[in-house]
Image (tube, rainbow, N blue to C red; front, side, top):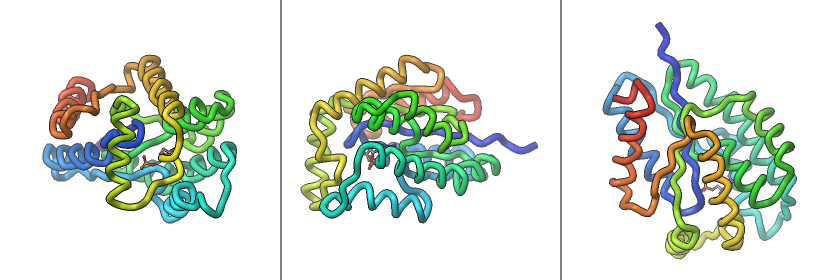
Length: 218
Ligand code: TMP
């Protein structure tokens, strides 16, 4: 019998610690079943095309102006490629797919914070994903000021501030509000985690919640 794949996405504002938590969860899955394939991908990115789009969206700000509509379509283009080239085939092989952002990022950032038409965002999301939805979405929720302070620390080290990180506090408040709204509307799919706790504690809390929600995570 073929094991069904498991598709888990991570969402949250900048500085919420998604990549650290994905590393923890990946190790956990590899430990509970060393024979099961586990892959981690990110959005935008995860394919050759997607990584080019990521660079364009994040660091080309000094040369290229990107209007909100074009931004939406670029994120969708990266996602369309990732779903068909990587995520669907991996799920068909029975893998666990851990994805750093997915369609809910578009709903929160382009739909709510950029105030693009909600119905259009939804249609484009569905077109890009062929209707594929995560089995579970983990929201790493963090006060906006705390997230921004973490990003500031990080960018001092790397000397790189990306285009989105220059947005206002109000922009990030809308993102956070929309995430919490989405989570409250679809409680079965979403888990909301307090991302202000120490990373190991957040990881433990996530695993406890997963064990409650998903039969194969024991
Ligand atoms: P991150 O993955 O390092 O957080 O950076 C990705 C940035 O792109 C982040 O600012 C959120 C933003 N983003 C959108 O605005 N819409 C999307 O659909 C996705 C996937 C990301």
